[in-house]
Image (cartoon, rainbow, N blue to C red; front, side, top):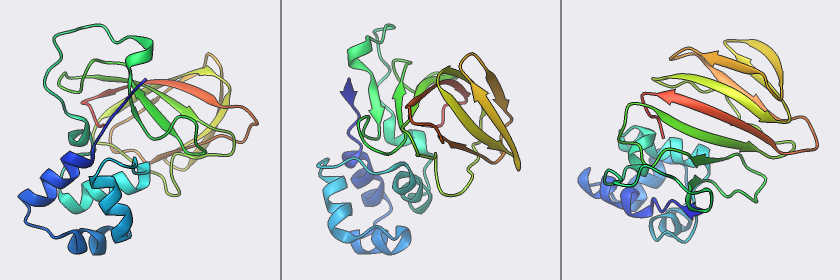
Length: 183
């Protein structure tokens, strides 16, 4: 699995906005030593930290993962770009499309036992459709809870708050498509 290195892009956006490390830390609540490690690509930021960085820097989340348009249309299983650490207690995402330069994004979300997609519900500018590949997961969409099992799917309209929670003992695998790309 190919790890996405976003530290250089965080530095690039911070520099373009002429923000100091200290100013970005104050805007996000991320500790300065942690931000320095993120920018040095020594650690991957959590999804929550990445969202705070995107908001503070005024860029869509997907900009951290932009790449030159891939000439290769195939994404090999062991070469996927990832967001988050797949073996951690945090939700992680694997990009199944070669890049984010198209009009749709296709990802696999891995939700470890006891994990949630965030503390607060989130919403996106794009529309999502999700399909549960493996496991049972709770999703709250616009204040309503749904329990989804393997084989179930759900559409999440654009700008609709939602939050995923895995109450089971197993990692849940969810396939989803987002248009336009968000990550």
